[in-house]
Image (cartoon, rainbow over all chains, first blue to last red; front, top):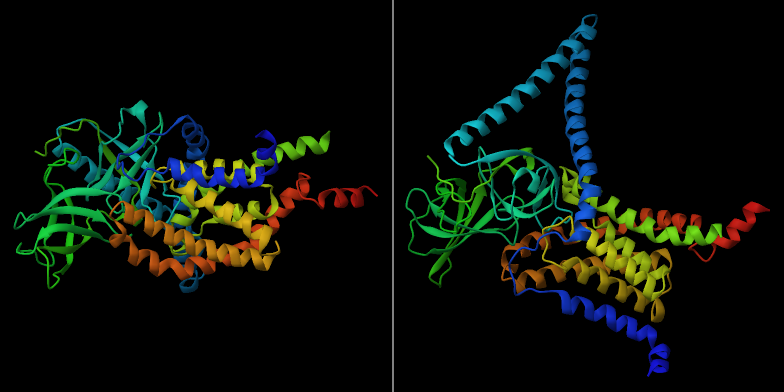
Length: 276
Length: 182
């Protein structure tokens, strides 16, 4: 037997590698899986570097914008350009601070509306794959974050906590293919399930064909999924699809959150939240 | 002794490369406008391993690489393990019976496996009942993804070969070492 195995070890190893995924891939369970010990080590090593790179990219983008502006100024002015450069740099820095302040103030305003405990976190990385759309934030279980907690911005719902380490958490956004949020149209209270589709829009599924849904309608959370607070904005209707058969219609939703410019989010620490 | 230590370090270098790739893809390539050409560098590394490593050591490195990448994605558990391990096995079989492990055949294999990976993604989404949502996105980015992967293969393969030469993992490393000593 051993001799046989040794003789055919190449094919045995191939068979072993073919069967590992078959045995381990579980598509029946839709439950999210927590980080294991190996993942903890990997995230511990990579997350600080991700944070540093994201910070550098943001600063470089800011510097680049400033530089372009300064080049234009240089073309228009001659002697005072040098002084203008310094002043414009200062102005741009102030504008960035002002924009940050505005974002934080808006976050705080929404924070004040929610009576439960919450914390602000920075987005440090996005999903490694272009086909899935999670983000990583710089707060974890040490800050009180647990799996399933809702994540918001002043614009609306971002997603929920997928898995955590002591100092970092992964958030599955509403744009992700595997995400689902119980939602309703604010105007008509027509209900459906919001699922992620692409980087730019989501699909509202299972809305009844007879429901009154129009382009421009605002979609909000129902709170019935026991994850997201009721009444928070999810997006606006951009298209409606009614097939010639069936009892439901599909609705294309543009998310209220601008995911391409997502820098800060806040996590609601207690799941039973109420909007005041 | 020195060569043996370097050969053993090679395994850890590949793990470090996997972490580096994960960081690169989750930060640098996630930003506009690079987002639209978001490559899968890991797949190229796995194809390289399929051509250059024996079935056992290459398979083990591939498993670790897949687990590292999975720690940086919201993808279904073991999806990347399935994709990369099957990619490794397919490359291994191809390199044994069908193609020569040169750069052109490597590019063909990378292109074919990128296509298979994207198709596999749709199959996975179908198992979750979400393929309808993702099909448009996958099809739009299918051709650009293959082109980017092919172009990157020209860059990544020589780099990996250099690493293997430096750590005496490549079969020609001994010759080059001797030449330098002479």
